[in-house]
Image (cartoon, rainbow, N blue to C red; front, side, top):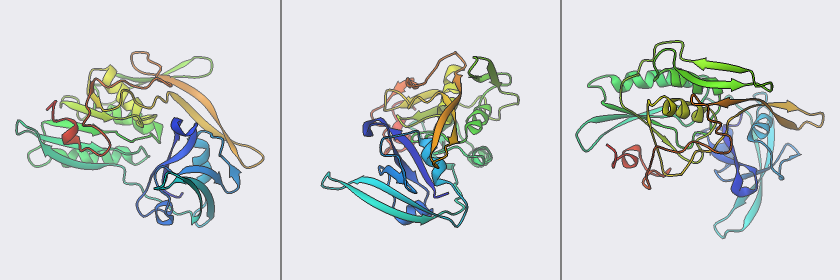
Length: 292
């Protein structure tokens, strides 16, 4: 791939924009920036908007092959400029989990797991991070920072919830086109089922990260905190089908419901507590200073 996270931005008329790039990846090295609007990929026009999954599927490809992108970028003068990029696809390794600690006003140690995306490697990285945080003197409270996490590998969101929930707890229900439900429950024993837990979210927290957030919120396992009044609101599971002209279309395979039966599509998750100090530029310590 090229190491880029994409989202649909309603403020850009539903167009797909760059949310972030992977440090050292092809997109970052070529100069692609967060906020760039994807207009064209290898000659395919996306200027009218589409699903992020469709554009992402066109950015993937064989290692060593080139890809050509045209983006729209807003300059310092507020004028929009078209920019062209050519980059070569590489094997991009994403280390999705970062750990840190801080001391709250009561002198207690608080551990932070920042999960900016979900991949097949996320769960093992989260488990390693939890072991690291619990080593030495341990922590009294845990924070999951899902701000800016637009999702990714959906099963990882389900498996992440299993780390914090008791056995047999419902995580999500997946409904197919005939409304037949597949219920996902915690089929194991969570390693962190008792430690006080906070989840940080924002308006770009979406998809797999919303599955995790809703499972913890509906089961009264965590307190959800954010600056924005709701998360993104993606409650559909979609696949990309290729068309004869080389483009693709995103097809909804299923929809999901939270443990309490909520459909968050277009609605999102409302935080339990709002904080003006919980913007993307703020640390977890600042976000939670009035609650811890």
